[in-house]
Image (cartoon, rainbow over all chains, first blue to last red; front, top):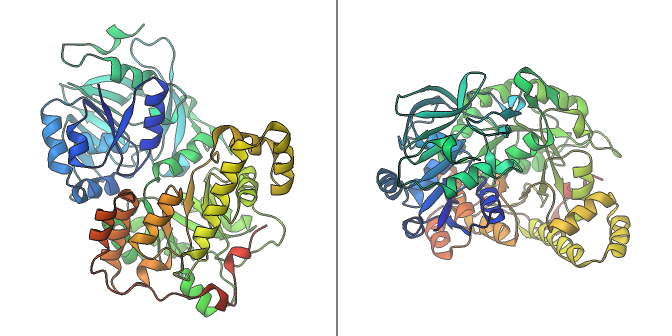
Length: 200
Length: 299
């Protein structure tokens, strides 16, 4: 299995490090050829405006939309969440909205950098909290019925899944905790699944 | 300074402050002096803008004392764009930094481009919730700034010259010394700490990890897509472009080209494509002819 990390801009290097740490050889994806060769994809945190423009510049917009429509398992963190969500409030005009998650998010909804924060996240079925690092993070304002909310913070969804698309408002790549990456890589996305059944 | 609030939320932790720098990697941070320029930068794909009253080339030309920008101008730029907004404080001028923090800027650049306010001390950056970036010409300077709480280092280069030679010198110096330290034995690290005038624990950390504990970007003299490719291949993790964009003949396409170059920095075919027909770059200056070397500021 080949796990790709979209390497246009942002914290792609940190995602690679986490994947390498759990024994997965990650590949950087910057071109349509590189995208075609991966079985799973991580879209990192970064600036969603910049990543969206670079998707166009590198001819990745349509190929990525096609792969997502075919059910490519994808993990999107922060900017990755914004790009994968159907509706974006306070977004940038013309920014990609791949719609793999039927939800509405507010870009920079948690505020500027002074309001960026670290908080423990309780994830359904997990024994201990996950360290959630929120950096100028998007707020999930509403989710469709087909979206499974896997974790909330103060009643607001912060980790969601729809089909084989997983998104988080926070940055698991910044935490010294590889459980989310491990789950994303080890999950058999071809069959029906519930999040917590697979966790010990 | 870390502060705890609702639901165990902690703001201003080292991880949260360094985290924003991680998110800017692979990107371009552009100097802008008006909200319109900030829009041009955002449209081109900048990951952040540096709000200031004059770009370094004009500061160099005008002379006199260069200070923090007017808060009204910074607020205007914050309202114009959705990407992070940085602003500069003078070296050692912790009250300018307090004001910038009150304005809710996303990053403070304690910058040698402005006239230093203190000839011996930099700002105690641990005392702030907002993260700081500082310039460095060598590894010792970088580690001293990190020990004072900087969450991002940028190699200084020579701002406002359009000349990449100093940026290359500083990057090679920092990265060259990191390589040597990773080969040093434990006894030699004491001497490295002494030579670099840097704290031993930070020197040990560099020896173990082979990199700085914070991201390192490059600034000072970048004016073409090729310049961006050069410093990224040398090891910079993102680039600051000061005068290079808005002192060129056609800023918008140049800004977009440098953004694409920072992503595709290893692909000469893409670099060739984006370098075509960009018009005149900013006029450059020879380093030997400079009256003031901005990079010499900072201690």
